[in-house]
Amino acid sequence: MFRLPEGIRHLPDHLDRQAQADLVEEIRLVVAEAPLFVPVMPGTGKPMSVRMTNCGSLGWVTDKERGYRYQPEHPVTGKIWPAIPERLLWLWNDITAYPKPPEACLVNFYDDTARMGLHQDRDEQDLAAPVLSISLGNSCLFRVGGLNRKDPTGSFKLSSGDVVVIGGEGRLAFHGVDRIYPNTSTLLKNGGRINLTLRRVNP
DNA sequence: CAGTGTCA
DNA sequence: CGGG
Image (cartoon, rainbow, N blue to C red; front, side, top):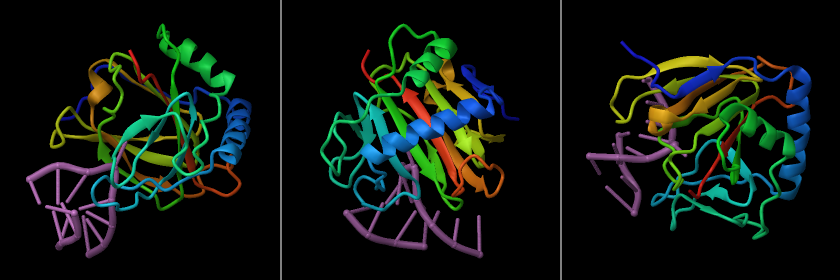
């Protein structure tokens, strides 16, 4: 039997179509300034299947030598990240009510074959802050486990406009994306899925 | 022997 | 399955 960890809340269809389209437009501007890059595994340098960028005062990056970390600059252009769009800050306040604003908004782009293996979000110093996840575009199968990699897992579908809050005991739960369902949304004209995750890094 | 990896 |  699998129980979703306490602190992980799925808010289906939280954003209406217009709100989703507005976010996509904002993300287009972010990507124009901070181009998508291919993250690689620490140590091996093996590329991941997603492409990513960030906005905020800090962005999550990874490379072969230095591994996972947050830094103020884009790893390719060396420029500071664009600001987090205001509507995302409103959403963070509305949903989490966390007293400090997010410092990083990780933008993950999944093409229809991309996946994300089970992992924990533990590169943030402030583990008391929740992570807020927003799904745009094609649906995906999202998998959640427990605090240990081998704990039992369960999965559910995430659709465009869904929001997931990952906090409390679920904050360090393993999670990942098993697969993208092609042609399940018309929001992104070139297909794929965008996931935005808002994170507080410093306590 | 793990890995925000891959394949059957 | 197997790089580092």
